Image (cartoon, rainbow, N blue to C red):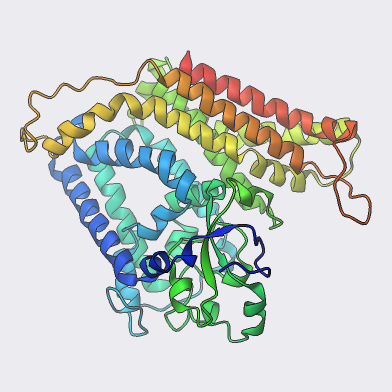
Length: 471
């Protein structure tokens, strides 16, 4: 069902297929998937607490930081956006308490259902939590017991926040992975949008939004009629189930469509994106770089060396990367003779380099994880490291695979990100509109000057990552 009143009528609606709409709108489908994942999640916590302390032999490390992390960045986010958030088991216990049931949404659950504080309704907590992960990455990514405590803490935090605040407040404002997935979901070719904007205009009750208070409608507190980016849409499909006008659909669209949205480029989101960009550079230095002293410092939490690493990490993530882009924007303005807001253009440029950040995370994952994929089957055969051989794989030989093609893959991925971001940078430069047709003229010399420093920033970052990942 495509309508001329849809914001993008040329996009392909998946839910035109009756079986797809029935599958996606069925609460039992979502519940069973999340319940299975919750069981796996609890098994991971048990493996972390009671399994071998050797990370390479423990299910908690291999299946979280190798298998899941790889699938998330190579498949789920680029193809499905926030599809992981739709099945994530972390908020499930809190949701069950909040809605008073396991599957159907009701109004007799527990909790105060307070509104999230306005001053905290941004990405600041998510960015800070991601920074904490980076500071303690050495133990979080290698020590099973620490991974178990982190996951158990996330479940407890989600449950506590659900008992105090409304709906998916934890997912939208607190969860560090929610922030990461939401930011990069803008590259995804999948979106949930209204079918016909005119229908929403006529329907004055707005149950899709106001119904959140009564226990139905969008649990992410979105107003579906105004939804224009994937960042805060958890793909839970609740809008498909509860819209009384049957006016919501799931669509396929071009990759990165959100990056050219007219939606406001918020400064807090821009800074969070640069935190992710700086973090992948730091992770590459720590886990793939040739400096043994840095690796030693990362693992010796609390030592003077670790404090030195922490200061360097914070300087890179909060100072050097955003500072370099800010300087590039300022230099572009000065060189081109423009007088526009540097802050506004800086925010737009942070969105423009999003593909570079995401492809760098993919390249880092390929270099870091591909050599460890051979650990997966042996750990499945002996998830606790207790000497089991459930799959009759002994003796298991865990050897690195794909080592010859990894550098080629990394170069290709990083070049895609650089070219994609360069195109976005040129589009992000403010341009005058001439003529009644509203067409934008070709880039002038002044506009090229305005974009050039940001292009140089992207090239330098790409060269540095190539050296880290391949040299």
